[in-house]
Length: 430
Image 1: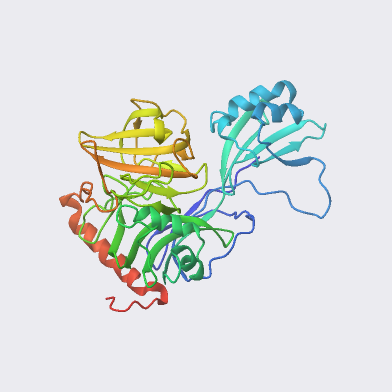
Image 2: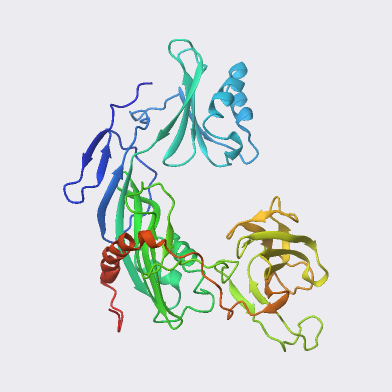
């Protein structure tokens, strides 16, 4: 199968940013369009195998199916008639992608040759990424290659005012609710979105959006964001260095160059509610006596992922009397966190294992002394419980001094975009 003609690299007359174009744009599955205004940023287009033309008739030489939940790649190839060639197809495909990463529900295509035997196999990892295995026309050996769809990247400004919830406000602004997760993760160190959101709070964002065939596909990086309300106003700007390539990982800082992240997250769960606060004189619902509740309880459905509040080491993971299934993490010499009543532990969680902030360490449950599924979370300093909602947490490393001038120039540009607020008027805002 011949590739499309080589990419043509142009420069945008407006922005000077490189635009890479090749002659193909695959038709994606229908996605909800984003009605908010967007401004061109850059386009990244690479060769992609075009689908066969639809002449309205059934094509018996092309088989499109989905992997079953229990299917392995080898089983599928055997079922589709690859026979002795199956292991060869698995071997060449494994050089590009781990076959164990294939999930139930993902699509695959089998093209049959003139003799009715399989001539190619295409694994559709996503709407953008596919892997094609076919025979070499010269030697007849199986070869695999990665195919990426043409993706157009744009930046967009959006914002809104919270009336009942951040989720509802984002929807009302015409954005996908996937943006809620991005905002929550970005400000998770400063804002507890279970207790700190109130009517009248506002949010603004400058975010990258990916489009396939002119239709919104998903969000890229958040370039700048602001969340403000009763708990204060917090801003974050993405920075990966002056003149750095786009794929170089970056970090978030505030308008002064202080790290947006902290050493510890404020909450280890997302989109749940607090069912019991830190209280030294709480009436215990099971023991029916006044007993201090030295942690925070987060009510959530069984199986909800629980995230490590900070980088650390697993001190213990097992059954702990009234705590039920519990994980204790050590964060340096002074700090530790406890995650109790888990239904189960995440794969590989055992004493001595290193975990990073945000890693899944277990799942919400109802083990131990619990009247319903929830997470009991404790924050300890020198093994003494402290209220995780009020304790001051140290920030991560600030922006390097050598990058400060270039960073502040970038902040000025992004602040101007944030100030647009996409039509959002904030009382007292500048």
